[in-house]
Length: 231
Image 1: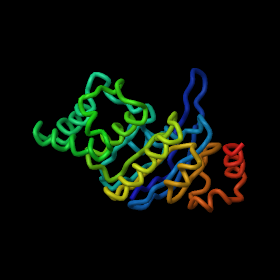
Image 2 (image 1 turned 180 degrees about the horizontal axis):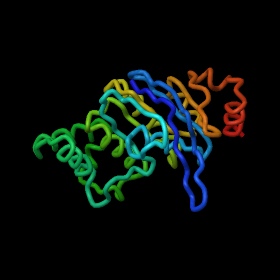
Image 3 (image 1 turned 60 degrees about the horizontal axis):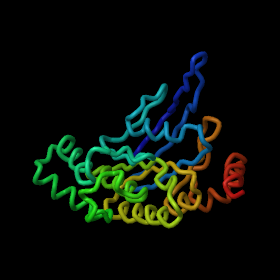
Image 4 (image 1 turned 30 degrees about the vertical axis):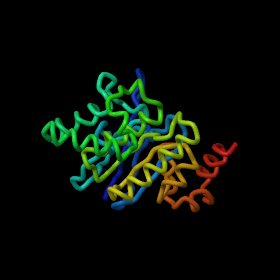
């Protein structure tokens, strides 16, 4: 379970300090998939990074109940000088303290899970965009997280590859019984993947509704956002 209470983050520039968002309070149940949507610049990725411990909030608190976290970054954040297999070996040996022999077996197993078994010796720049995304998913999974964070997982992918990534996410959630948080503005994938959907707008959260309820909501911010995506 994830409990967020009164969370806020300021946006600082040279002259002023303004709230990007503030007083966000919500709860995510164990094994639930929750999607956060919102216009560019509203703080979706910032919120995800705060939950993931990569940024500090300026107010509020988060309770993760000592659960391990894994994160799949929008731009994958893979090590270009390491092969696909080596990108998985690094967290296994450094974070999980596994021996090279055990780590290699584990890495090969996860590469097979995401369909990259035959690409183990390739470097990231030798992989397609979809393959890089799958490698990013595998790297997040090797530490056996109970909470998995996805930052815009289908951004920049063609529709066929986007569907493959979404299908993989559904499969892995069932397989590993993870709690999943997703940031995306892909409405089709949001409704496919999410148990509930939030909209972040004007520094506040709206919704927290199941997909059909979100699409049919009479909340003005949600209506405007959904209508804008469908234009």
